[in-house]
Length: 111
Image 1 (cartoon, rainbow, N blue to C red):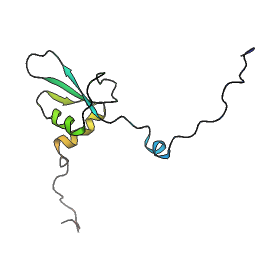
Image 2: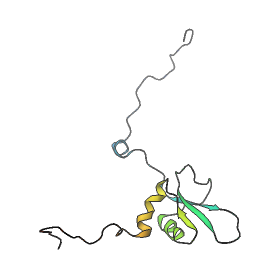
Image 3: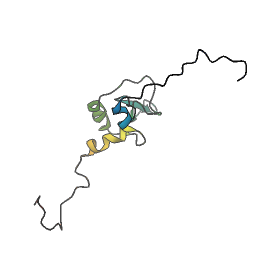
Image 4: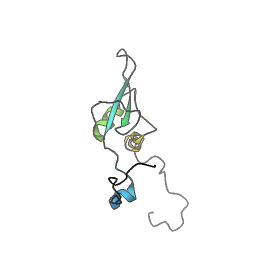
């Protein structure tokens, strides 16, 4: 722009992010929060979100993963499937799903 002095604008390059962040990407805040739904009458309806989820309620207390799993086991509570809370689903349901009997493998070293 004409007539504007750029003398005070820093011109040095920013330091690169740490190698771990370059490989894994920026860190997500850890923890989960509970979003209560509906009225206070009747069974509780709620959704567990990751703290960094755009749909997570502001100011809700942060839960540890153990608290999030305990909460998700209650009827009417579900894990939000569009954020990192969905990563708790295999822990909640068990890792064995999809790993049935090993059949038809010739010379299977695990038999």
